[in-house]
Each structure stands twice: as C-alpha cells, then as structure tokens.
Length: 299
Ligand SMILES: NC(=O)c1ccc[n+]([C@@H]2O[C@H](COP(=O)([O-])OP(=O)(O)OC[C@H]3O[C@@H](n4cnc5c(N)ncnc54)[C@H](OP(=O)(O)O)[C@@H]3O)[C@@H](O)[C@H]2O)c1
Image 1 (cartoon, rainbow, N blue to C red):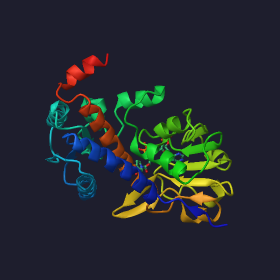
Image 2 (tube, protein in one colour):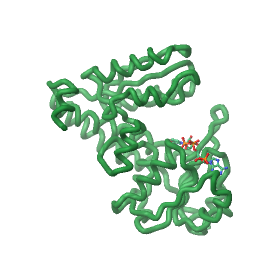
Image 3 (cartoon, rainbow, N blue to C red):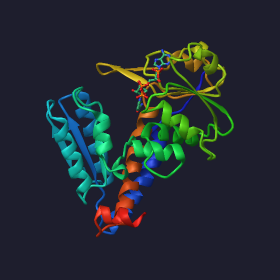
Image 4 (tube, protein in one colour):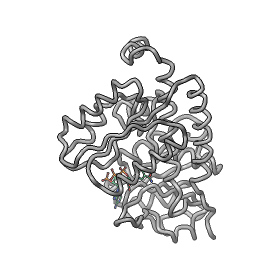
C-alpha cells in the first residue's frame, strides 16, 4: 500500500485567500493591519524565518514593523519593546521569534504581551481560553493540523486520535483542540509521552496518529495501524537538514500521510496570518479609542 499524500500548500492557499480578502476589506475602511516582529540575536535560521513572515505580510498587505535586539540584550529591554508594541495603536499582532538566547525568559516575554496581540496563540491566557473553549488566538501548528485534516476530508469526529508528545507548542494544545465539540474535531484523543513506555501499543490502534515529539524517526511503520492517517508535526534540524519524527517508510503502511516537506509547515504560517487578521479586525472595531477603554467596555 502507498499512502495518499496530504500536502499543506493547498490548505494554506485557501486560508490565505480568505485572509487576503479580509485584509482588503479592512484596508478599504482606511485601517492598516500590522504584525510587529521581534528578533533577538544573530541566529541565521531565525532571521530567515522572520524574513519569510515579513515577505508574506507584505504580499498580503500587512505592515510589519520590526525590532532586532542584540544577542546580549537584558530581559528588561526585551519586555520594554513588548510593552511599547502593546501600547502602539498601529500594531495589531506581535511575534517574538523563537528560540531566544538562553539568558532570557521566553515565557516572561510572552506573558508581557497583550493576549489579544499574541498571534502565535501561546500566551497563558490564550491557552486558558482554549482549555475552556473561549474564542481567542489559537496556537498555529495545532490549528493548522485541524484545518489540514478537514481540507483533505479525513474524518476526525468519533475516531481515535493518538498524539505522541505533550509539549506546550504542539501536543498539548492539539489534544485539547481535537477533543472539542465541533464537526472537524470531536475525537477520542489519547496523548502519549516518555511516561508511557509502551506508547507503541496506543499508536498502533490510532485511526489518526500525530507525531509531536521532535525525535527524528521515532515513528516507524510497525507503530502505525495499516490504513491509518499519519501527520508529521515534530521535526528537528541538523544544520539546514530537516529531520522529521515520521520515517518516510511509514507511507507503505499508512492510508494517508503528510509529505516529508510541505505538510504541517505551510499551514502553520497560514494560521499565523489568520490570527493577525482576526486581531486586526478586533482592533479596528475599537479604532479611535484607547486599548484600555476598549477593554474596559468588554467587562
Ligand atoms: N512543523 C511546525 O511548524 C512545528 C511547529 C511547532 C512545533 N513543531 C515541532 O513539534 C515538536 C514538538 O514541539 P514541542 O514544543 O511541543 O516539544 P517539547 O516540548 O519538546 O515536547 C516533546 C514531547 O515529546 C515527548 N517525547 C520526546 N521523546 C519521546 C520518546 N522517546 N518517547 C515518547 N515521548 C517522547 C516528550 O515527552 P515528555 O513530556 O515525557 O518529556 C514531550 O511531551 C518539535 O519537534 C517542534 O520542532 C513543529
């Protein structure tokens, strides 16, 4: 058996086409959506990711003010930049490129951000909103995986999904998302990790297996139920070489599988811009008032 491929590009194109028309609608009212980015240090890969996001922003008609801080910047200076963006009425979304240098706390920087401007959907407030089912920016990779499954018409509702990994970026929010009551979710979700030494027992019975470990080649054909859907979310880089969790030979057992390159990545970027346009729409509804006045009126 050779699995059907589940590319992310057509999914991303559909999401971005919707984003583009929403941006055009905002611009036609005189409102300029913007995504502010923060890069700390001189990591080439991170600088490259920021450039890709800035190019995509420009293509969609989104302004992208940028701050590049030195490698040895103090935590307070980073927080000051975030506070500046929080207070800037021209900024709707803020992205801190991860990872940041080891002497800095990413969690503290994220927590400083206005949760409504957190376009990565990783702020503790937004994780809380996800947990209790309130609207808010969703974490991009998990939300992109739900979109990818829906686009390729892989039934999720009522089926058994096994997620390998409970990390804060991927496994944990994805499990919450796919267990929610909604036609594109509504699954029986099991999460396995290093605390479950016989995790293979669970992955082998999954209708949909999602790798979110960041351990190259951890998923092998013998861990996959014949005909199952396999989604590769976890990756590691060795220099510029991408090392996915899912071994390519799994395509011989799976019924459907994401490609080695161009699966979950494009949908993640598309969901980021969906979060940006949603934040911009929210901000445009409060245009002319200060952010705190707008917030006060929602309580
Ligand atoms: N494609 C994308 O756009 C995208 C976006 C975001 C993240 N990612 C990737 O997704 C992966 C997960 O990200 P994260 O931040 O959630 O990672 P994380 O916090 O490092 O979590 C990794 C999880 O995998 C589990 N795990 C690791 N080795 C294992 C093993 N040998 N057996 C069983 N479980 C194991 C860990 O278990 P314990 O909890 O027990 O330690 C942990 O729950 C990373 O590779 C990241 O690069 C990709």
